[in-house]
Length: 254
Ligand SMILES: C[S@@+](CC[C@H](N)C(=O)[O-])C[C@H]1O[C@@H](n2cnc3c(N)ncnc32)[C@H](O)[C@@H]1O
Image (cartoon, rainbow, N blue to C red; front, side):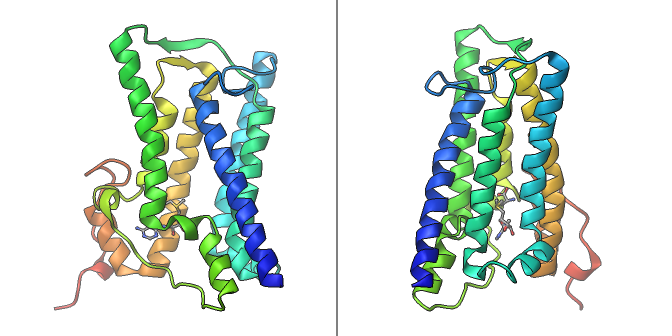
């Protein structure tokens, strides 16, 4: 019975995530199909808007990074069932995004504006490609595990949790963090960059660079020399850029 509830919870968390992800696309793209976006919503004085928006970005980054750390997970799985840990994370991350959508205060000063039709179309294409890369990367890693469904399903079927696996499919052969590369493209590619949009793009970029450092520390701890060798060979966010030096531990003994 408890496992059925856990499976139900995982499905709800996944549905909430997917709806939030779709809203995020519309929010960042300032698409007229949603009521509030990065450039449309309740007004505030510039200083207040800056402080509120920075606070919202920091909260989002803090929740994401803190709950993803191994030490936190060890402590947290003493409180929540291990098979529900990822679903709780996914739900918390979605709630943080909803808080950001709700609390965001637009800052509408124009930073750049591309009026040329071909230039604007190219930027929208990069925007769409960015989101497609994000979604595709989740499937390359393991979409259903990343969003907590696999863990709940395995628990329901009385199967042991899957051991972490190091993967290098498709995009991962060229860059170590394609999902984040996709976010970079999606947040920066716009024909109309406002001050608020720039703040969101820069804030997310800063958070992603910090998140990568922490994530790679965990990946080295789990996969050891194999990941260190990968880090030295493959670029971080763009091919060939952001490789590390080959560590001594990754060089096989003669
Ligand atoms: C939200 S995903 C982001 C993955 C990656 N940072 C990216 O941008 O594509 C984070 C999870 O992916 C896992 N991960 C990252 N790179 C991996 C790889 N090459 N193989 C397997 N798991 C990986 C991390 O351990 C973490 O649990």
